[in-house]
Length: 268
Image (tube, rainbow, N blue to C red; front, side):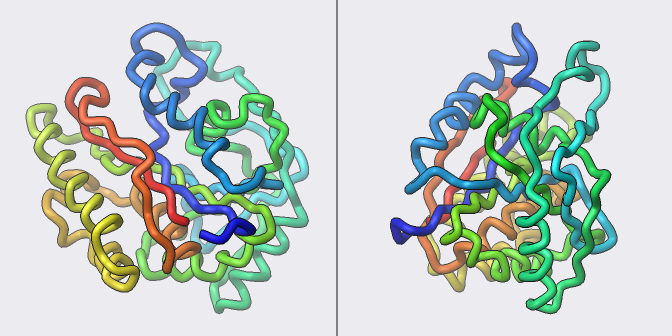
């Protein structure tokens, strides 16, 4: 990575509003929290804004938050009452939203603006750990319905110029996400898929890496790890924006909630 361009990251963001909780839920995320808190110091320069691609927003076409002051979207259930009142008051960035829209449209990708969409927990929870002062502008970019890997890789490629302009591109999801999988199958399934993901991202050429991710569903335990792939697809955007650059695994935990293997990566 050149010193005048930010890396991109794919983050496993954890469960629900964990950063606003205490006790066992917070403790289960201790390793993840330590990585997120240290991540700003890994960057080559302080970002001027964040472009966040969260697993928790899908739209018919790519869609961008365009409000100057986005609201909150508590898209989780069954958590303590106070977690439905937390605020992460990071400013939006309408100018950045317009710039992202222009880049995507120039690449032939349909893109709309949405002034009503609030920050979902795939965005505000990791950001609350990374930037607790909530003073860094953030714009969310949706996934598209259909979750086409090639479409999201193309979006990342189109957005690559933002890195040299101080925009930190983050894909927020989870390297393992199948809440319906029987618990006795989770350890092996998550470990098998995580091993494939690490080998693909760390040990192959850029061209092989991209091709491997485009065909991710052929990987060992792929559909056990991701019965539905919305938590994996943000990786394609982060990868596309730094496609020729090396990957680094910045987090791996083999006992997340006791038995699950999860990872996060940096590109560039």
